Length: 585
Image (cartoon, rainbow, N blue to C red):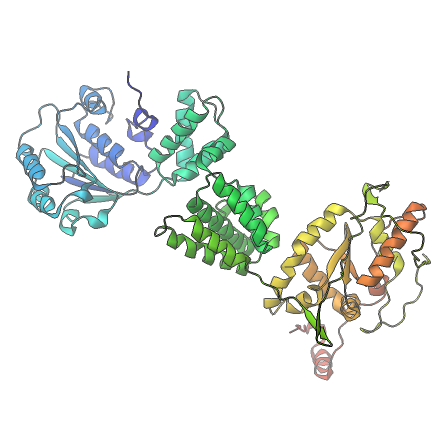
């Protein structure tokens, strides 16, 4: 016996077996039950959504001899199911689209059915008929014999003459939902006794893009690759799909403007046979979900991202940047149809996103140009390998320090009374710094450093520009749970961050940026090197202070909620009391 493909074997034989299209099924069943059969139907919709299947079911229902129509058991139902019923004629308009073929059809229409109640003509891809053939069919379609029913099926209704459409009952088929396709495939897999992971079934349903026939064709190809235990990775390999994790990682690389790494990754994907068009739209779908989540915080209305995926990408990108990426990718997608090699336009899109040229700073002294070398800051956790000492689950490695290095010493006695702080003279308690270093964790610092570049994107927002401008030149150098040290090159930047009057709005901004609340302080780059060396020597000598709750004495000694009022504000408070609120502009 010849092999039959899955979509032919599992073509629905009852209305109840059709996936989706409930509105059409309900209407046709009522029409059959009440014997209100139209003389012509037009089924429109995307491929693989059930047009031909429902046309055959309608032909079975109106010719069925059983009580529940179609019963699938009577002779008429069996004959139509086996494609050998003399009164149900299927015509492919793609190959029978001429005037002569239509005239031959018209000649046969006048003959009464030989076995069933109606003669049913199912004309597939009817939009392929020539204008002459349409005109020849027009009169018969308008006033056919009572025993004849025409069912026209097309994927392109706009190509059909309006005079033809006006003579038919039109039913618009829609793409099947993901859930309908998944449920239908699971029924088939159970019948076939195949072991397929749920993730693989869901991915196949997504690839089908709303078409049941496409879903079964893809499933059949995947089962031919691995019919023992089909996994998601198998589907990725067969169809050249990039996993969601890799796509998110690719977007993060684009955000970092690392052109070399982005092009290298793109080359690897192309070598593995990735579908560039599908990748483009997958990236757009991810970016759309990012924008939706940032505006709604609702996971239920997202298309592709899960809560796990959200945590990996949303904190690192702004809505404005996501919109920019979408515009660039959609512009490339529009050009794919005109290109022999679509990957060229995708590569150009990557170059456009990563194009971030930074001019090198140059100083001219006595007509000699010298490059300015930016100082390098090494976080406290990035140390040379041996030896290692473990302190409360924190591994801090000792660098090699020569004996000649002079390290300043510090007294770890608490500061009693701070001098009145001004924005030009701010002293940070060394004990607070060392307390953060003692509890420092590499993974916390790494996470903060990954999110830190996003600060520059907040400069365009008037509500966050002030905080972003104060922090964007800083570098996180040490962090623990609830504590953060930021290094700056210049002292004014350090003082601005440590100034108690700036602390409240900076704290709010950092919480929004990092997703958690941190007590933070700033240090100069030069002082940071000395502090780090001092910490290492103390650790070697087992003289580190005991860790305790994070404190900031230069902040906690002041009322950060206090607001200096001008004369007008003071007058308003005197008039209206505590109900007055002042907003910072």
